[in-house]
Image 1: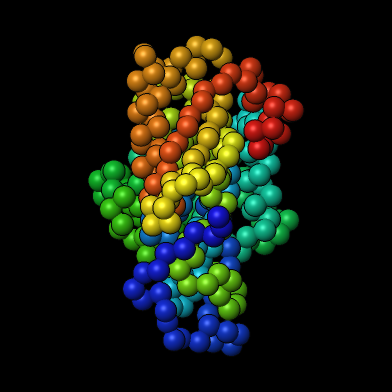
Image 2: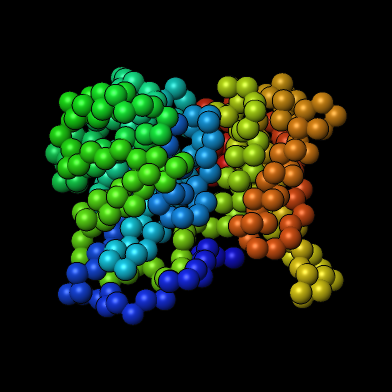
Length: 322
């Protein structure tokens, strides 16, 4: 268990990557209000899924590092929860997590989805970023995500509004779904990184622990097609990951036991579904994603439990990894 790798053609390069070579490497943070397309853009920049995505807000709860390596730069992406006006202790902790991350990165990408009007939430984040700059100078690139969802006239209006919102180093539209201008976003962000040798070897896509990624994949599967209030109440913890004994070396099986926590019995019924049908669907979809991540067969054992009002309970938040 450890760092996720991929060995793709072209990963082995002969270009010099040390000091004085002009090579750049460092950290970038994507921020934005919930459901601004940050996780989808992270996956597109890296070229493989390293962050969970969902149409529901508050999908991301952990900072996920994705590593995008080219012949001229290595961009290490830190995907954060969406900054928002918190209503619970969990919300406050997620906002604190974002602010801590902003102080540690080299460049910030502010994601503003083209299919949504600039609103109070965006203005709130713009003020936070301006305050950050007054404390510690950090370049901010404004990224108009989901550019494929609107026509040219609407996109032009959106870009003008973004320009009026703050003083950005650059403004760039892109579509993570179609891939349009994703490379340009990567290159613009990388241009603000310091000169440095590579920080991760070729082929490394993320340093996120596999247990965390598995929990995120289960939560992603559980979020699909449920009521709006459920995502905020859903937490997933991997209890154990154990190789099945007695399996042949060329056909291993990994037993993965996962607990899905909700806050009320009525929510437990939603996750399980009639006769367990929904939980079986969640298990099937999550298992496929986990097997793709690990590259081996998995037996996924899901259990749904009630942890009453866990979002407001400091002890339960700590137990669930927040």
